[in-house]
Amino acid sequence: MSKKRTQLHRRRFLKTALSAGGAAVMAPTIIPSSALGRDGAVAPSERIVVGGIGIGRRGGYDLGCFLEQKDVQFVAVCDVKEKRRLEVKKIVDGHYGTDKCDMIRDFRELLDRNDIDAVLIATGPNWHATAAMTAAKAGKDMYCEKPVTKNISQSLILAETMRRTARVFQAGTQRRNLPHFAFACELARTGKLGPLKKVFAHPAGMQALMSGWLPAEPEPNKEAVDWDMYLGPAAWRPFNAKLLDGFNFEKGGGFVGAFNGGGVLEWGSHCVDLCQWAVDDCLPPVEYNAPKDGHLVARYENGVELIFRETGWIPLGSCPVRFEGETGWVEAGDSGKMVLSSPELLAGRKVAEIGGYPATYHVRDFLDCVKSRSQTKGNADAARDAHIACHAANIALHLGRQVKYDNIKHEFINDEQANRLRSEALREPWRL
Image 1 (cartoon, rainbow, N blue to C red):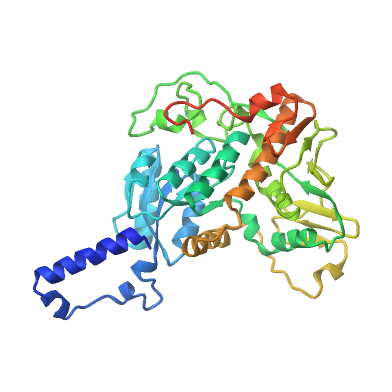
Image 2 (cartoon, one colour; image 1 turned 90 degrees about the vertical axis):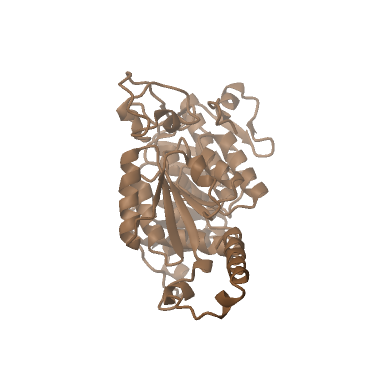
């Protein structure tokens, strides 16, 4: 897939041929059919060479989706934890029947490799944006798990970096590639529900949690767990094994921004992203109110309301969304099913029901876009706007009052306290 690799291989071939006086060209050669792309295999020149950064629980699932694709060659895993490096190598080598998956501790070493076209970034959320932007500057395309940013400032810089470097970026918002969610958003976006009035997101909790500080424990050997690299851009704190889980909310773990993103950011980066798609990917809301009775109401410039809501849903599985217009409404969730205000909204169409929020279709969309150099469904601009909405809602939650956001200046209007929460100091050498 890599032009550099293809050119290098050609140069080596010609050099060998010429040094042998042309004999290498004339000699009969037996080439495996897999190298030619026969028998269902994909020729090496058409394969996308992939490396993984931070492959844990969710990343292990994503890895399986990549390995399913015949045009992917997964060649290296990078993780700060030796145990995970060994686990992933075993999976990859077992899949290919080889012993060639490289293990790397520092992700910069992986990004320096010219043979790698794209990376899967599935670290804890503290690292997502920094790793993605470093990968982009190294010339790699990327599939990046969510939440992809820690704050509003990172959301803006991430999108700008992807635009400037012309890299293909896919946020792990896989519901954009599931047919029932796509159809529900289409109904809202194209006016089939009448003028749109309200879009509802269902975050997993309405709280903004502070990053914690736990008692110091003996720090492991750097090869076993590279604690300094694990912290990365986050503020330093002593090693504690409980902090190795980036979503350890109960114990104050996790490093999502100046305060932990909690459920609003973790699930909101999915369901708010769908609401953004339903409003035709317009700019984020401009007003965010403090929560009342379990609801937080935000308003777009055109008056449409984005409502973060915890209760009162039709049981359609996790991550449900609801879109209401003047003449109709639709709800969809992870069960793969939709509920419509009228069967006429289907207009004779049959929408596939795919439950369980699989990522295979999202991974395939990413790989196709790597080849075509086109925008993915979960591109950096879409991720930016959905994450800004989540971060702004978190700030309203944290402050317990209304905040108003200017989408042109990207700042809160006459609100110094809120504006201080748009970004955070990063440790060296990880400043963006």
